[in-house]
Image 1 (cartoon, helix red, strand yellow):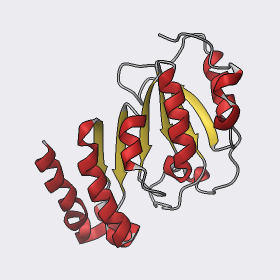
Image 2 (cartoon, one colour; image 1 turned 30 degrees about the vertical axis):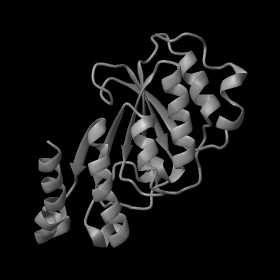
Image 3 (cartoon, helix red, strand yellow; image 1 turned 180 degrees about the horizontal axis):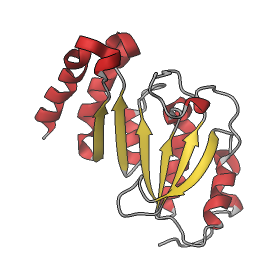
Amino acid sequence: MMTASLSSDNMLGLLDMSNIYADMQINLTDYQDEITCTLYTQGCRLHCPWCHNKQLWPETGAKYRFGDVIDFLDKQRVKPGAVAFSGGEPMLHAFQVIMDSCCLRNEGYKTILYTSRIGPDPTKFLTKSFDKIVLSVKGGPEFYGEATYIELLNSVMMMSSIDFDLKVQVLESIHGEDTERISGPFRKISTVIN
């Protein structure tokens, strides 16, 4: 239940730092049983060949700030119950996305983060800042770099305390015989967590 309009000046100030959102859409699919506003952040460094949001790859061109998001939410005839952060890659804007999520949760919205975990490693903050996280792994160590890949494996272990989905995206046509090598470590971790 929303307690007040989010467009009050006390919400913005520091939080409305920069244009990081390229688009905002209302949907029924991004958060189970909730009307959801999905925010698409600008920028992604992975450039996956199968990506359906290639227009979000450049790190410039975002049109909207957090204040615009608040205005968009306030204007909806039927208020969404959740806000999803997607991309591009939201963690390229980790501080801003985490602050925006905390503000929205404070106002009663559920929040979900869709990430491939590219950017800084704010894992300890993520588990306290979102109601749900979907980690979408796109490849193996050669795709991310060895250190980032190990951080991803560690992130999965830390995420077990919240509503969490893990997607390991490997395509035989792209990854070939590496599909087991890429997905195997995550399958083993998933077995340990469950």
